[in-house]
Length: 193
Image (cartoon, rainbow, N blue to C red):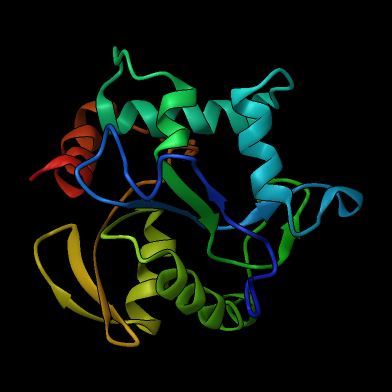
């Protein structure tokens, strides 16, 4: 199914007909971090499956929980299983960046991941996309045609397919991620009808 995509996306069972979002929704992370022996095409799928199953990775689970809560609010009743069942998720950079998230992707890694992004968009055809991380967002704005829609939002044009997208600071950001600041932004991007 995938030609350019090296690390396959998670696609929830309700992605095509979401129950908790108004449209098909893609969550776009930035990079892949793990040990070399764990890095393979199913890394993202395994991380999400483990998170909603029995084998939680504490690092991914913190990220996954913050992502869900920044969209629906800290006290949401939307469960992890329900949330991940309704979205697609993948990391833009298609390479192993390192074993810890403090390591940053190179410009070459980013540039060589653009074709995979196009394949993801043209295959999954999301209507809305939440981009996690300011650097990830700036990278997309540099490489992908877009029309500005607001302070945090654009419409991307990927090979003629248009998707509404916006960004929030990465939920794993150690410099003081604020639900109060970013929840209204995430909610407007993904939930506003």
